[in-house]
Structures are given as C-alpha cells and as structure tokens.
Image 1 (cartoon, rainbow, N blue to C red):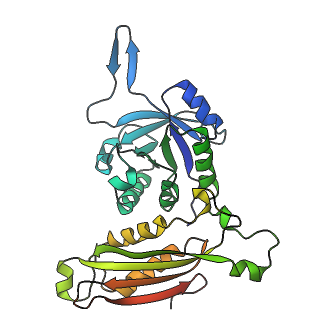
Image 2 (image 1 turned 90 degrees about the vertical axis):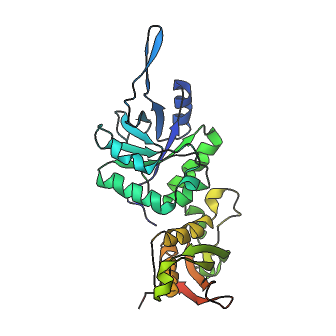
Image 3 (image 1 turned 120 degrees about the vertical axis):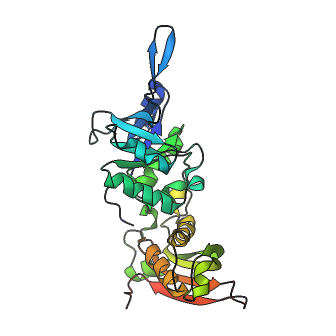
Length: 300
C-alpha cells in the first residue's frame, strides 16, 4: 500500500543525553513529557484533570518543523474527545500494554480517521517492537513511537520505514523472465475467526466460524534474508482477515475472499494469492470457496 507521506520514527526519551543519542542514530523525533514544573522544595503537576498527558516532540531533521510539536498522549481511543480543545498538533495513542494486543486494526483505523478529520497527526506507541512496523504501515500513521531503542534496533527500524519492500526487488541486470520466475510462497493455514456471514435470515442473528487458508506468491528476496525488514510478514495476512471480521455482516464468503485478495494484492511484493474460505458450522465439516487472483487481473 502506498502511503501519502513517509511514516516517521519517534523515540520516547527521559534525558537530554538519550535525546542526543536517538537523534544521532536516525530518529526523526524525540518525545519527552511536559508534565512537571520544578519549584523550590516541591514538584507541581501541571496536568489538568480530564485532559490528556502533554508531551513535546522535537525534530532532528531540518525538513521537519523546527518548533516542538504539542502531543496529546492517550491510553485509549475513547479519550479522543478530551483533545479537541488544547492546541495539539499530534495525537499519540500509547496504551500501557502492547498496542496490537490492546486494540484491533479496525479500531486503530477508525481512531486515525478521527485524528485526520480533526486536522491532527496520528502517532502510535504502546510497547512497539520491530515486527509491528509492517503491520502498522498498512494504516499509514504519521509516526511510530518506540521506547528505549538501542542504536542497532533504531537503525533497523529506520530501514524498515524508509523502504519496506526494497529487499524484494529483483537484482539489477537480471533478465525479465528470470526475475518473474524467482518467487517464493508464504502461507497461512487454518486461521479461524468468528464472522457475521450468510444470506439466510437465521445466519444474521449469530456469528459462525470461518476458516481461512491463504497462499501468496511473492518476489524472492535478492539476498538471503537476515532481518525482519527483508521478509514479507504473514502477520499482514492475518491482520487483513481480522479487519474483514470487524467490518460487520457480509452475505457471501465469495465476497470476503475477493475483498481479502484485493487488499493483499495492493502490496507490490505479491504477485498472486490463493484464498480458501470455509464455513465450519453448517453441518458438513466445511463448505466454502477457493479463488486464485493475480496482480494484473481486473475484477469483472
């Protein structure tokens, strides 16, 4: 999926020294809380009751704004209403647990839409790890916020954000027919989730289990992969299926298969996908559909 602008890398810091190291290692922003104001003999909390926690983001790139950005840190999407008055330019969703375990991708997408409709950037934090990067890039946030990243981890994260599909490009000088033949396959088998699906009335009042099997033909990496940034993550496939489950009722499993294929083939690294969707709760062991779609095909 092509992003409208690059996703930035931000590092949460606790001291000027940490900020200096993070910027030297390639962070676009360093993020620090603005919660306390020291006065002789005491510390006064400046956070107003019912208001989000205020952070400031300082940029290390001369192409980014020179003045610190006012960042509102939220722990949950339902706190969004509190930021509408406060002069914030960025909303950071930063729960005290792993972001992708705390909220579904559909919830994150809705939160991001709300930020943009309000004219503010959407940043994601929440104990992020490097494998989270390709999963969140699908949403196109303006920045991802990491905590306590060492120089090696930060450098790898920087490479993943700058050019996620680069390792899948064919080698220079390779004949076209050879490049097209050099593919691998990734698969997800037996991924089962409850869905609201079915054309009959009785199917609209309950969920039923659907089992997905997906195989995707991908461009082979131009070298033996050694880093997370050099492989296509199967989490992207399971996340896409979860998003379908979050979108409400669908009459036909055929429509789910087509929607999933179209979603996955937006990624330029995929050449084709085979998708099997099975209903498991209608009596036989399974009924369903299997499709194969190629990147150069058009839906009739």
